[in-house]
Image (cartoon, rainbow, N blue to C red):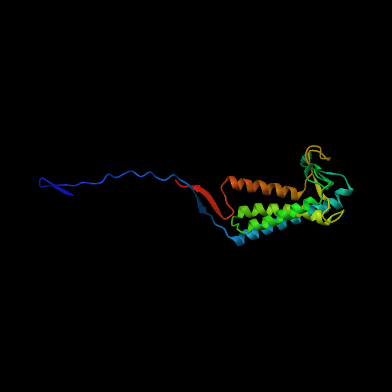
Length: 201
């Protein structure tokens, strides 16, 4: 404040407008715990392996010695086939490579679950683990021998001789659903550590 001609004159520095910072993604915690995630992960994996093994055993003991079973009006046929390769029987002369890949996937999944809190992610990883372990069991313990075993497949779309789609099993289905769920969670911004990407308003 300055005195001018006996009058008080107040001076004030101009106030500059400050631009609001642009909104950035922030992490919003969601409920969860590592213990619960581990439990869900293990239960899902064990359930898939159990169901897969039971269906393979039934197929081997029943369908292998009988006629295909038609389900849902012919949408799916239950048949018996042994696959030494991947889908469409690819790499069937290199069976040994599949158990090695499966063992790597199993190790990677256990590394992934260490920091996982999200139950949804635990389900996705459990499905993948169950699928990988189910087919790994065939590779290790079925004929013709360890690391050379042929996977038992049984579901065929639309016909009884796999003319429209590769024959698959429960383990294959679990793998597919688990990977699809993981991709969906990524697109939704759901993170394994129990946080969700969100923009500030």
